[in-house]
Structure formats: C-alpha cells, structure tokens
Length: 265
View 1 (cartoon, helix red, strand yellow):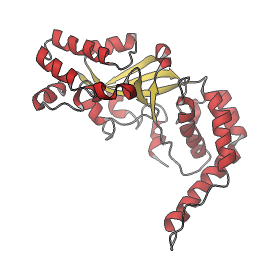
View 2: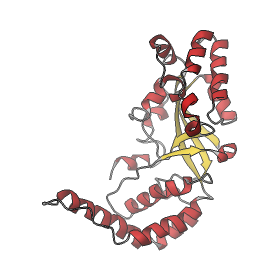
View 3: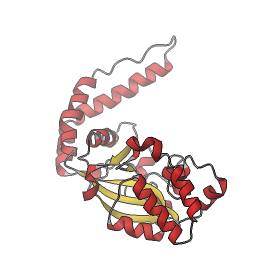
View 4: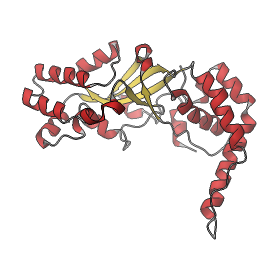
C-alpha cells in the first residue's frame, strides 16, 4: 500500500521509473512554475506559453507511470458521520452508495429510536440520490490526500449523518438538526486498488507532484477525489479515526507519517 503524496512509501517499481525520469519531471514542473510566473506578472498581459516538456511528460505519465499504478494499492480517506453500529458494519464490508443502502441505514435509525418513521421517509424522499443516481450510485467517494477535519470540503460531511445523501436537499430544519446529533464524525482510512476506470491516471498527477517536490521543486501534492467502484470488493478499512481521538485531530498534520510535508511547499 502506498501514499500517493509520500515518495518514501512508493514501491521499488514506482521509485525505479521515477528515478529514471527525474530529469524530465524536474524540468517539466520547473518550466511550469516559470511560465506561470511570467504569465501572472506580464505587462502588457501575455497568454500562458506552452510548456516545452509537455508532450514527453504527458506521454510518460499516461503510457508508463499510469500502467504501473493500475496494479498498485493505495491509502485513501473517506469522511463521514456514523453510529458505532455503522462503523462495525463498514469494517466488515464496504458498501457502495445506493437508495437501497440509504433506506437500510434509515431503517436502522428508526429501530434505534434515533428518527421516527415520518422523519426517515422525509430524508429518503428528499435525498439527491433520486435525481443524481447515475453520478452517485455504486461507488464510495474518498480523497487521495489526507485532509484535516476542519477543511471546508469535508467538514459538512462530518457534521451531518448520511452526508450529502441525507442532508443536502433536506428542507426540514428540525430533522436537519437531528441528523447533526446522530453518530460521530469519522475519518475512515481505506486501502484500495487503482484498477477502476481512470483512477490510476488521476492519482499519477499527485505521484509526480510528490516526486517533483522531493527533487526540490516548489510544488505541493494536490490530491484528488477518487471513486471506489468495481474494486470495492477488494478494498478494506485500515483504521477508523473518531472525533475525540488524538489521530482524528492530527490527521494531515502529524498523522500519518510524513503528513506534515503536505503543509509546506
């Protein structure tokens, strides 16, 4: 298992191919920074010039590095709010998003007197999944770079039970308040393959940014969202970080190892 943002975790195969192409990687990112600086500081205004290393770099990224990454397993991060029972279920088996799964989870809340039937029906009926099923179903979303719990993109997912599937279009303020009191904020550490669709190509950018940073270029690994789909059967929970635990607050700062490097360019 590798961290796409941490060269020290890369496999020997990945390290070997990056080492052999370090000059290209350094030249591409250095040129990119130079061209952007010239573009931003130009007077009169000048369009951004093309990177002379772009074609060779893109060919390496797509046709060499991505092929190796497709057979790799990486660590990703899923931000959510769960009850203890849901945590136990997730550790046993990762389940992709669907209306059926949302209904199952809502039924469990009703059984445990956390919502009544009318409130459960309201959450279900107003779920964005009814209108956005094709872009949300049968996948589990994660981030390839660990983010602190107060980061604006993930804090709403930790604040309300059910995440966007439940609170996003919910109109009832009382039920919305209830969802914020169900369960606890959790950050789920997951090991997964990169065999789905464009996932390997997507994370190759972060791998290359991390390597360029190792070479001394002032660039920060940006990470990306990653949808676990067909590979979900072979994905597994590595660790669960719950609000109140030291690791929950340390995430992306001092946890996991080398995470503090993400904060500096």
